[in-house]
Length: 367
Image (cartoon, rainbow, N blue to C red):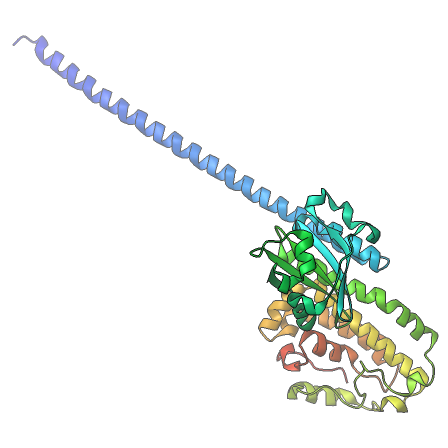
């Protein structure tokens, strides 16, 4: 074996080793680059998705805010119907707004995609005549009785033969009915079908119901401001409770706190009050209704969670305390006979006449 033989063998071994090393290095670099590129792309996608979600939420919040603002600026019932039909376009494909008249329902505004656009929901004169008895539509009857949204099958027995014929509903189609509750009664019903986003429409219908109640109460408020006849003030209105007592089911701690705060306040029956005092009580009750309605509207999610936990005060502590402070300053100080109508309205409207649902930390009535 010549001296050059070991050198050639060693060179071949080194070349094979370096070749494998270079291959391993290339694979390692490729894997690292691929991993980093994949991570960067996933991060970019996640960021883009997060940004898109945030932007969508902002856009939806802005859209809902504008919708609520438009509803609250409605000047009359007809204007309200038109606005409600318009702001719900993104949330359902078909819609009819009905007004309720004793035993019948009458279409006021309508949107049918088959007609090309929402123009048919403009003037009431452009609507195809649509009136039917509530007894002919079980779903409508249920909404009026419960004052809750209803999901129904679009059959003649559920939504009336006239609606089925007008929209060409198939029996397996689902439709949604949302109440427009005004003053404890269902004054209208929003009927929706095709790609319905129920939570958003329900919220807008709640706002519309509150606005409808405000619009229908304007004449009564004006009459009260002018001063009702003495005969009308001789007895308490039906929606007022007796001044000498509160609703039943008061928590014991709340009653005790109320007695401590009662001081030298006077308790009189409605007919024992002077006309001026009766006016003060009416103003206080109107204030309470408005405060509780706005409270429920502005904090709907917190209100639902608080009611489910039977601790409404815990969920709505800040708005409740702000309302209590305003009621104390504006109304409790003006008459020694004043009743805490804010407390009564919260028990009635928020707690379904069960004061215990307000929660263990609720401070109780102001008097």
